[in-house]
Image (cartoon, rainbow, N blue to C red; front, side, top):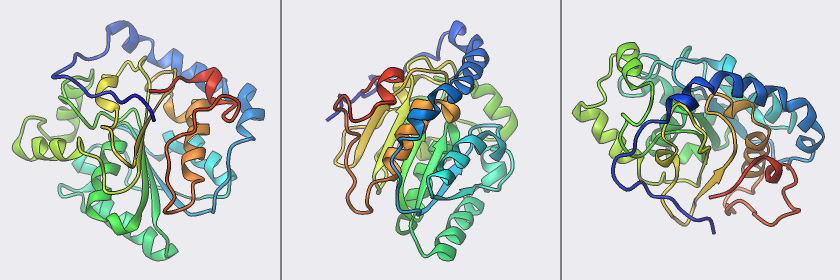
Length: 265
């Protein structure tokens, strides 16, 4: 089992250096896809069940194109969230009703439980969505999602309040954050990086549980959706048989892509 990290009180936002180097590091991660292609081709293939990908704060489905195309190439029935830019409640509804309806539609159309992948804020939403419709969700995978700790341990919380109209200190937000910090009712894997320049990585890790796991990768926050190690790990998580979830296999030689790019926690 992985060593589990549990935030001890409030933590600080990432350093200015990490924040300022986010863009060039993300571009480098995108550029690493081509040389990593032979190893990515060794990714596990699954049963083709539906997968919905939720974008991060202020981004749209365009940001998840690489991830969705990669998973589609592995045979999965991939779905964008189709709710425009992720501006929190302005996008999903103040009660999350638009996002709930989107998941319900995919579940009913396919007749299958849907795996949810959420990047940053999208991962926080995915966790909450799994609580609202657990019967429709197969598993949750979050990418650099600050679902625990204080929401002020990010470099974008002021922008979040300004653009979403939601105050992070109001009673409803505090209630949702307390709920989000507990494990979802379905298997959940948190993928994170200690070099994150946007959110405090300590707030992006799952508490220890029978169906929770954490995978650390090396890279930026903004590059998580194009990071070869992330793509490989996501494919591994999705390929598990339904009802037979287990932690990420950490034996060297069995995961040829992840080890050159990633560590584990």
